Image (cartoon, rainbow, N blue to C red; front, side, top):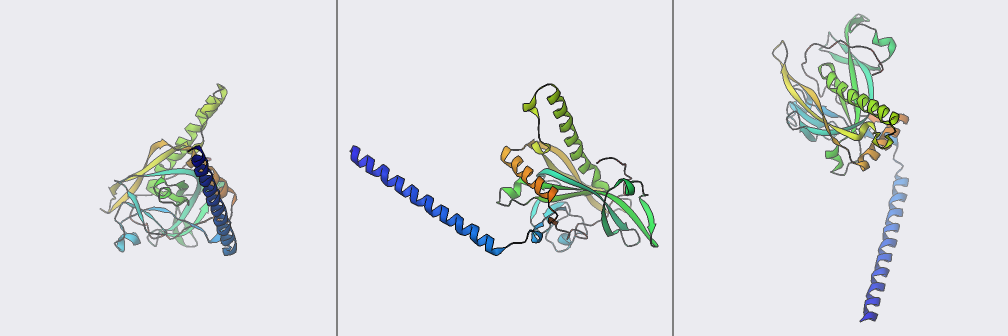
Length: 273
């Protein structure tokens, strides 16, 4: 009996070794194939998580409804203002959208927010065109709902105009974490130091009506839950990639796809954020 058990154990070890060899060979083939494919990183497009307005193209095409959060590339509905969706922001950019006030606030261009343009008026005339300058926050985020489906790409969530304050609340939470870290280090509690993306946020929103009796939606943000360490590591990897790479492309098809009536544009303050 003991001899049979030894034989069975040896057979299992041999089979396990054979499976490992097959797996290594498969992995090598996969590596070789992807190397031959020579995928250009500049061709990779980061999708946006868009909040649908009444005039959004997806809504017009009956692919989404007012208040839905939709993947700008695939059109997949991922949540809505009444069915919140979890996000894990790890990087942000602040900018100004320059809008044509004579053409229903059509976007002319986007430019980096700087101390120089921070002092410019929010309504202005440029080359004979009435314009508006609108603050914008773009957050690169991991979305647990898409991670669960096997996607490792982040998504970008934009906050502007009447939704700007919702995005600013994420920065406020990050600054609070930074201050707690400072206190923890002063008190020698290094184990309590947290990364900015140690907690998630929850995207929801609400429907509002402007003075023209038009209905639109604005995003809302609440604190979510603790982020697992493996997802924090993913955030850190993507942070380094987004911060250093000039090849990152963000889908721009939302310009006009998520448009809609809003309240008056808020004036902005200056500062690092």
